[in-house]
Image (tube, rainbow, N blue to C red; front, side, top):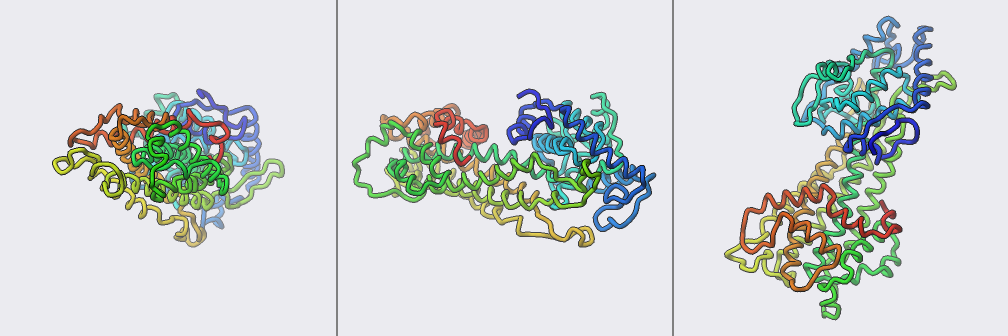
Length: 515
């Protein structure tokens, strides 16, 4: 996708990703322009009649009862943005900010925000010119939406904030706007509030988590299958007839992925009649654990899929009736709960992965040499790689404390229950990154285990997974510096290279289930 017409059809997660990561250009459709204009006409009428409407001719939050004269409404909106730009911490990534800008543009295109068309056009122009605001990651309570992060975004559009460059630098936005031929945005009635109020940053991170989390789950099926072969475990528990007795969607998909990856494997065929009664849970229960995590992440996809095409600012404009209604669509509770569960599901993928790595390294639990090295004692093999995986799994357990069960009242107790959805989103990103590293360690160890079983050949999918590892990590014959190889493996997991192997060989009926 190279171009996306905003407002012509419901916005999807994939389209947000196309803008955020693929650099797709955006434009406003004809119908979207008409809707934006109709909503703005309602706000203009309120100003003309000098009526009282929250956020238009009143203060905000606890100050909602403070009347603002119509000759001060522009100053009101500018003050709102400046006062709310108080975020701290490391900046959000450029792709997250681009995604948030796209989601907010779509919200305005729905025609319930009350902004001028020029405001939406300015936002679209910033996206297309790759003018990406510097947005600190900490400061959102996830209730009136992502107020502080959004304020930093808008302040950059006003020429008063800062940008995050491609090489990670922080620079003033004014010169970049000028270079792109854009005048600094001047806000009128309600426009600052329309740009600030909403869940666009939580939803943006949610889009990334859906895309990368689904890739992680597909990767975990393939890498888990590689470990099955390395440990000479049985593929019997993955039979379709077994899954049919408990047809949980994600479980069916994972079992099918493993069957395809190991189909015709000489390693598997070599021990069909062995006397092993059953394998450990981390091997035998891959469909049940990975499958449950798939279904948990599917909930996040459903929630984010709704959120990216929703109107989450406040108050809402209804052009048909001329009403301006204060409501609570900005509250991030639906996202917070789903993001917390997503973090738990990704942490579980890492947890079971580390257990498989441990088994491959422990000779008493496998038919493999200690720490996957033929000359153990003199060589330590992958001993300490498991330590790293264990540390990451432990960190994930801390990160999985649910943010959504917390609430700290704000704004003089007017905003007395908040979602902490942004906190849930940020820690889920950290869990994802840790899980990618843990799976990378398992993949490197599984490739080594498969090599140690030569000349027996792996299956088509597991063999392809091993080949990815061997591009940057040769078979370990003696101790060497391993960190760069583990970093490269992590990059391969994050880039979806293992997931692509699963998806390329997927049966259409299976590929759509549970995802």
